[in-house]
Length: 276
Image (cartoon, rainbow, N blue to C red; front, side, top):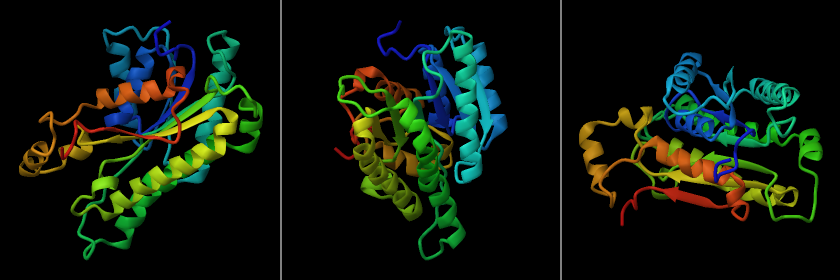
């Protein structure tokens, strides 16, 4: 068993069709964790799944389930959690899973609709808030449904090991701001506040909730940034490069693992020391 002790557990990863979400799905698979991949882009998830299967890494001990889901739609999110639990239960019946339900959730789904505020349409604001903030709320809400919580995460005095974990992906933009991204900054700032409050609510049930704050990372979002802007950004980063999604994924896996049982309600920045 690896140091992270994630083998034979099951985790839901939203936004798994590209970027950080895809990297998290791959990293969890490499840790022999079973992964429920969720994204609105079915083709993207299929490509990621094929990459996992064709990789030279040992994914033979992990199983995957793909769910097409708009995280801003409550019915689809409810269905996602139900499908994930059914998937985990199937693994239990085959003696491959230690729990009959999913105990880990990673919220990577996110979009941008950049514009100056004087030109930003209400739809551009709503779209970003619906996916980035409301989507995080909905997935956490149904993951922590009262019936699931009472059964899977009973209240107890033994706080030495976490029994569940949620990792939400924030952004350095919520802390430092960025031109043309008031909607994105507000949504990710909301994710940070949601995480801190939620961590207090569920600590009694030994559930850890943390936010990972990436800086500038190679992703479909960063690919849309003009080269001259990227060059300016790189000069703000001490290590003089953008981060890779795999580097963020490694941090996420640690925060999901029992190795981080004393970390909750925190925002952990991975930015290459931006602006220092």
